[in-house]
Image (tube, rainbow, N blue to C red; front, side, top):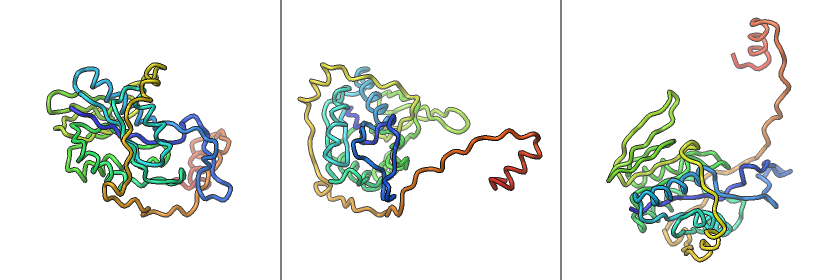
Length: 253
C-alpha cells in the first residue's frame, strides 16, 4: 500500500508572528519556516506504517512556493521515499486556498493511486481545517478526522478520534482520508545520515497547470491586525460583582 502525505511550509511554531506595519499581512522577512506540526505527525505515522509492514511507500506532497523543497527534504530525511512539489505561487506571502489545494491533491492522488492519505488536521498559519474534508468529498472517499490513533488491518483502518465528549473509534474502508491530531505520536528527529540521504531522493516538480487547476484566490484579505493585548485580571469580592462585570463591562451575559 502506498501512503500519501500532504505537507505545508509554515512559520515555525516557536516564532512570534508579527503583522506588517501597513496591515497587509504577516511579516515573513528573515522568519524561520518549517513543516506544519500536524503534517509532521502525519509523516511520522506514515513512516511507522511502513516500518510495521502495512505500507510499501511513503510519498510527501507540498503545494506552494519553490522554497517548500526544504520542507519536503525534511520529510524525506524523516523517512519518506520520494516527494512531489507543486509550485503554485511565486510570492511567499501567497497562501493557496484549501479548495485549490484539495483539487491539486485529487489530481496527484488520481495519478499516484495511494491506499491511504494521512494529513494534518489543519495548518497553524490559517487554521482553516478544511483541506482534508474537501479532498474526501472530491474523491468520494471515506474520511476520519482528528485522529489520535490509527491502525490499519487489510482493507480497513481503525481510527480513534478526539471529540468533545471524549474518544470515538470508527472504522473506514480504504482508500480513505485521515487527518491527524497532536496526540497521535511524537515525530522523530532526522539523523545526519538520513539528512544526507534525503538530498539524493527524488522530488518531482509540477505546476497547477499540469493538473488543470486554477489557483486564483476566491477570498480577499482586507486587513490583518494583531490580537488585542490581554488586560490584567482583577479580583472580585462576590458572585454579584462577577456577574456585574461580565454583564456590564464584557457583555458576555
